[in-house]
Image 1 (cartoon, helix red, strand yellow):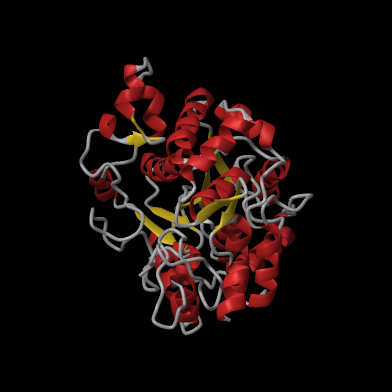
Image 2 (tube, rainbow, N blue to C red):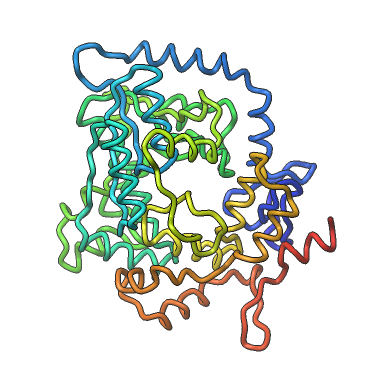
Amino acid sequence: MTDNNKIFWCKNCISMSTRPRITFDQNGFCNACQWVSKKKKIDWEKRKSKLLNYLDKYRKNDGSYDCLVSGSGGKDSIFAAWILKYKYKMSPLTVTWAPHLYTQAGKENMDNWIFNGGFDNILFTPNPKIHKRITREATLNLLHPFQPFILGQKSFVIKYASKMNIPLIFYGESPADYGKNVGHKSKSFGDKYSKNQPGFSLDPLEGKDFKDCYLGGKQVGSYLDEGFNLVDFTSYKPITLEEIEKKKLKKYYLGYFLKWVPQNNYYFSVEKTNFVPSKYRLDGTFQKYASIDDKLDGFFFYTRYIKFGVGRAMIDAAQEIRNGFLNKDEGLRLINKYDGEYPKTYEKEFLDYVNLTQSEFKSLCDSFRGKNVWTKKNNKWKLRVSCNDYFKKYA
């Protein structure tokens, strides 16, 4: 288990021990690296056969949709929707929860996905005034400007599948690829829907009244006391466990059945839909093709860096190392160069969106810095231990 009082790094992919939900084995390998190691031993032909059996069970020939694919037009959702429709002859409906503020590349790729790929799509845009308010609260209370987006996205997709009576739902990669504690045998968010299943809970209300639940670190009832209407928050309200069981909804990771390599998905999406990367290197990292839809993306990664010392370059480098596209030395150099870079590109748009000045935001960030991660010297914040220094000492 992670010891937050002693900072160290994965011996393989150089993920930091302060990363949320990270665990290590006795050899010093993190859970994401353990997962990738297990993937190498998987019989993928057998897994593909399982997928075909599921698809045949749900396949329809009456002109109606037989599965739902959640996505934004990024490389992974393009791969998932394309494979299901054109290789396995399914009839998917694609569903998108809109980003806070589209980037040019994000909007172009969304259009390319639908028009060049040839997919039906439902794009849901939550009430911008409400979404901005909850995002501001999430920033102030949690330093997590993406929390409302994540909650809304997860809730809406399942609710819409229920509304359209499409019981088969596909997400892309398994969260285990990014270090979440999901077993290599887990093909869904729990094979059985229950309140005690591991991973993302499909019943986040856990029996509570919606007014008692939190959005942006603040109870829904508190917003109502300020004069908001309950209907303003309907899009964030999760589906009940009872409805999931009644509609027999099944939600799977396509990455359980098919070998999932994000960089390969990028080249696939370029070929199939003319996916375009960002014109410029993304703030805080070295790559230009992942998480490029939303102008708030950079601040999501930056605030993680502030709280945990784990920046965007570290996340990207670790994934590339696990998948064999970088070695450890290359990853260390990239982290040393880019990790923690302040996201200047869309700073004005972000600060306007959450109604903060630059000085207010930076002061807020300082108040959230983990004491075990940061120290202040000569009036400047510095990581107590950098990965570069750590590996110089212990490599």
